[in-house]
Image (cartoon, rainbow, N blue to C red; front, side):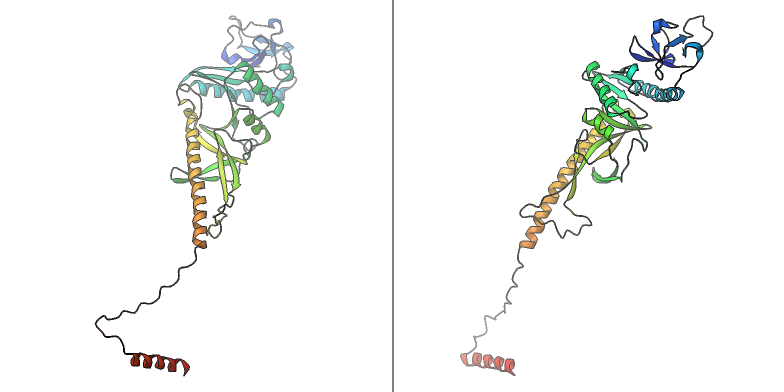
Length: 345
């Protein structure tokens, strides 16, 4: 029993779970197409007198010629529909539907439908693919979103699995006076393509969203009047990193991830954005500037301390009693002679 079909008139995927009101039953002049094999489908159970639940069927009830692909599409649909219901429940969301910008059943991108949500004055197109297709399919979807939904944000929620989440060692940060650890990933080619095209790559982990910022590692140059040696650090103090935000820069070496609550995405009135994550990034940037300034100043202090010669020891001052008379010339001569004898004996 098929739950979905490609509607050639609406140019969108339709699900019988959403209801069949407005959809003509039967063949409908070939309006419905199988998303897996491309064959024309029949909408059954749409009439009020029907004794079966509404569903799409292949002609002759032979079933799809690509059952494995059909099963993958059904599984991907479950993710999208669940996400759609989550977004509909968020405060501030005034409209939520599904759309397939730029999709062509003759040359399918392999992407499930996206969720089109409106929050206040902003619109966002949200993708939730079980796996990313090739770069060209991604670029085609991004271009279609720009053409069909000008000005909309484009967000890609990826699954937090090893195939889409190349995890590295945790990244230590100093945040609001305390040390913290952020997850760190090495973005793959597809994630970079989305980011560089203006899309937002997030990872969805239950009720948490992981929002990336860029990490670019560098070494402080040695400037005149600086000494970066003998700091008694375990690592080279010249080794440092900079943040790129609110999205990773193309030259970022890795991505750090800020965890925020899913429900916080609409906390800012009239917008769909991870404002909490952006605040953390602002705090990281401020801490970075303080850290870089302190290291350069300390390098100058070390140089100044090593370049300053040690002070000469002060001569011992013998206190003289102002009441005693000065020694006579004879007594002084006897004292010098006695000292000389002592040194030569």
